[in-house]
Length: 291
Ligand code: RIB
Image (cartoon, protein in one colour):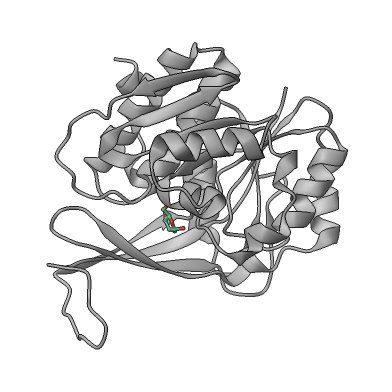
């Protein structure tokens, strides 16, 4: 079984602020750092650090050297990555004193995937291989449909939620990994139990992972529901914590962990990420998580 993550790569401009800026407010930051991130790249780094050989497909611009070198340093297979003469995606991220963030995205090259490129990438994968997707690239509907036609196992982290998702046939998804906000959009429910029940009714063939930040996470596999509390840590920067959870959870599925083991390990990895700065920089190695 091979694992493909088709997703975004971003430069993250991270500003430390007292509070997230309000409408009309001009705010000075206390520091600014540039990290490599993007939900796609973060999840590939988490998969790789958890011990999985992952192919990352996606598009960077002519300024993408650092995004490429971080991928290579993390032993992500970038043989299918595409480079074009545009600017890479970037995110402007404010992180407040409690570690909460606010993210403004510019898609750049992430939003310039083409059907030809998607077809070329998918031609390398076959029945039973896994494709992991988020919602930070264009053509998501096309990628889902073509992956389904090739009988790939589709795992979707529908983040960030926007109207592009309503163009996708989500019945083709085998596993959703989502948070309360995304769950609310998909089900119009706000209570975690109701979100899970409604997801079960709408997406009858899918397993659902619902993450709740410091309130823990649920995994609904068929008729069984598992719960894991969050690990308590001092929050430094929540950026990339959800991606860390997702990458670790997918690795646990591949590595044959039990649902309870997988939830616990993923929650622990995410908590470690919360206690560190940046996106890719905050993702722990499996030796730290399994210690
Ligand atoms: O999930 C965190 C990520 O969201 C950041 O790395 C940023 O690039 C945005 O894509």
